[in-house]
Image (tube, rainbow, N blue to C red; front, side, top):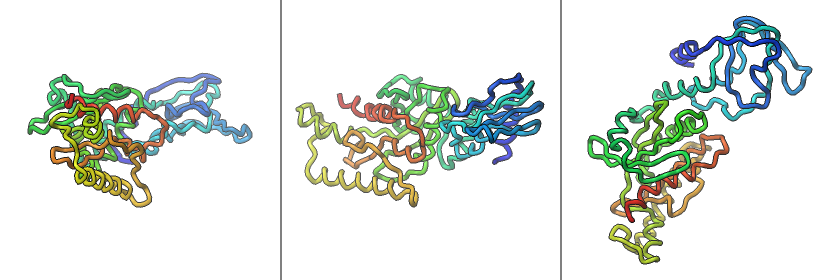
Length: 310
């Protein structure tokens, strides 16, 4: 582990005292803390009570919390297999899961080489203090913005700043998006990983979704931007979407990135009707939880295009 990360762990350790019988870490519950024992004894109890043993001063319990910190995948959803119970008075130094979350954001940028890191202030300025909401999801809101160089962007900003579950989702989504480079996938421009501002920045795609072009014409609600697609254009869009999926499926040998919910609402069209696949449920390859709110957030991203066509 990086020496700077180790120093930060030591800096964040907080002293705490426990008394006889206190459950410091509970079997079957989500791991929430790592404990360095300064003085006293703790009993380690597994499912099989015959395997009980003790740990004392200088030993660590719950080390899984930081074992894989550099990969931003510490086991927030892995149930603890052992209980740690105080035997008499125990003095310890504690690192909480919330501390680890802050560390992930503090050091996360070094793991995304080549990724543009925006400050919270830069995104506030780009979106005119988050003035123009163009999409809503359960966990994120999407805003239209403009960077200083004139690039139009869609900023997907988390509504939640503290819970580890969404924080890691942002980190892992960045980890995937920052490596994808294909003409038929919506371009990822960067992110903000500050504890109070968690956001992903994408290129703004102005010409609506494939769904809009197909169904608005059928319903007689078409506009100059959603003109009827010729057979040639439809075949071109289908081919380009297939190319994007083939790229994702072969991105890492033996570890394909699976989009999971491809449909016409997740295919954006550029000015020249070039297909742009989006909906970073693709990051699910690296997210081993069972949250199912990705669809809602991806729908929010789609909404920013549809809003412009009304």
